[in-house]
Length: 412
Image (cartoon, rainbow, N blue to C red; front, side):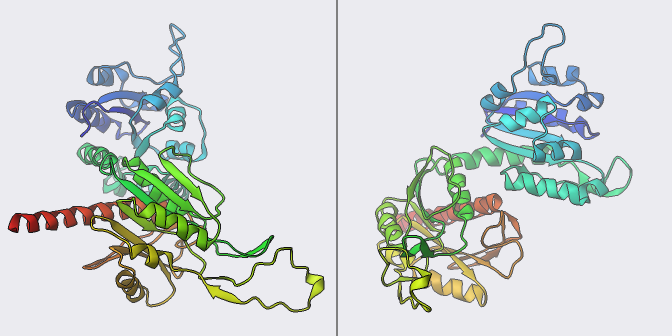
């Protein structure tokens, strides 16, 4: 999976740096082309003389070569890399990455990286458990960095606890899994509804909700990263992804969203209904701004909006996979199961406002994925991580469906 891939291996100043030589060797043996970038402190634990022969490349540590003045371009490295892995990653480097403190070659390369980044933290147990470290890890995870969680065991302090860098073999597996995922949706088309809908009362007022679109666009980014062609039918949000693989169709009302979704979902292999569509809209929209001075009371008559997931899913064809979302405050799993059946969906992603850190306007979410044969609950994660879990479940479902179809054809 990683043969011919360009990987930047970042090494920081911790005792676990000795494991980096083993990881480097494993990556090279797997066929990757690896460029080592070290912090100055890392050279106190393992030398460039050890690492350069293993990689077949000079190790980069400083912005300029001391003797020749040659500039080491962190921008070029960021463009060259298909993946950046920082192992070990100390508490200091985590803090610099999370806050954009670009005072060494490794952090500037991270800030220039165009592709995926993994970090394998390594430090003493109290440092790892520190609120500052956990806050920095959460920030990086929300930014899309993949955290390879530290393991438990004896540490350099001879204390026993969580803080050991993951073993090189485990990190290699994560690298292989990343590249396996990267193209598993190649050739597929994914359509999504994203964000809220705004239902006009008059030219300046509307009925809406708090949806930010973050979850939907995290899924769109994940699908695009795996090679899919993605189209997102989006209600009004504050920020849209800049990924050229994601086409955005901007709409405002539920009626506009339904019309666009019907057109796009019929061409999609996977359709995902993440939008928080307003259930009702004003029966009449005033042509001019309604003046408060003109009336002491105002009554707005509301009419039902279309159920977009229900109406679009009626036209679902064989081979398509449709996924819905359910935000519940009570009887969540039962209500999600009903939605699954009623709307002809293959799975429903359930979250609850009762879960701290889940729901609208957050960078995290806690979901349970409901399918026709099982419910899978996940812990609180960044929305980028949740997106990966959802897409993994979609691909597992599609693989299983293909396997059943193959068995039926063989039986015939």
